Length: 474
Image 1: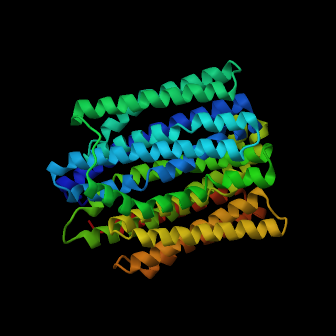
Image 2: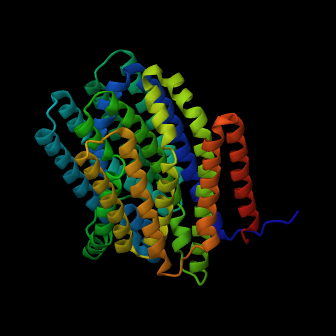
Image 3: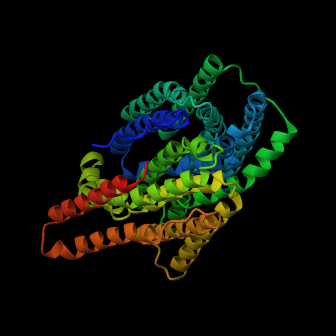
């Protein structure tokens, strides 16, 4: 059996960094999954919809308040001399403080002016401080990643996230209101900020507010396009819940859409944070940078369709029964909706990974153009549905998938301008194989058992992934 070539020191550091990011996100996903299961079962589908809708406002503002600084920092860190990194980190902290405060105030203003329900208005106002708190926490975690010390993110966030979940579930079990639960959660965010700051000071030294005009200009100019891009990406997902409330009301439809979007948001965030850890490796200067990025693009494309497709096929069989069994019969339609549109996660995963190549090459404008195309596609779809009186949850999520697909195609087109192109066999082969397997799965359902067809499809996709991995050069 051939031995794998030894990894370089930089590759080992990137692998270690990514591994700790993966552990952190695995912990987050497991904890959030358990939390959603218990919390949704305790409060019911409609209350759960109100709960998640109130959080969507601060989450959308948080995407903009980050100003694209996380990705910009990871791509810029290697090029800055060690003597200037303290000023870079301190200036970024100051900007996060200012932008987070502005975002918090903006969400509060929107709640006061746009939300007619008093309880929902106060929920949005309480959660608004999450824009500031979670923005600062995310900056500290980005610095941990830049220092290739992602284990500090794991150690500082794990106990706080556990405390938050236990408090929220205990209050829900005791029959307390959503307002009380919101106050408890935001107090945990304050504690999480203190824990991350303490870990940074203890392991990496003091982090002070700073204001270096040169870095300020770089942050604002370099992050402006990413900030707009983050806002567009937030609209294509979490923002869809606002459209659901506006056009379909705040009843069961809101709760069902909230669950599906919550799952997609969790997985999308996990993908984003894990893949961010590869930026220092992908952007490290060297003669082989284009080859590294080309190989990354090919691997991401193949594995997204092979392994992502396998997860989709499995999900169509197990998700409806699993969701209703875990959350209760009232969530049965939400489980069916999640199973039907879980393929969207393949496209979301491609967006979250291909963006690294665009950012790493400094193609911020091209990244923005791709997301503008996707956002325009979704907006046009919603407008057509409204005009025809055909607004429904399946129609809205179909529009979301169409928007994500437009983004992926535009991103591939832009990457081709800098020499990062997928071979035609790769570009077409993986999606075509998945499409054929899905078509056979649906057509053959009338003559064969769904379970057997799913197993055959899973086997073919996993085999294709293994063959690709075997053919990949060292």
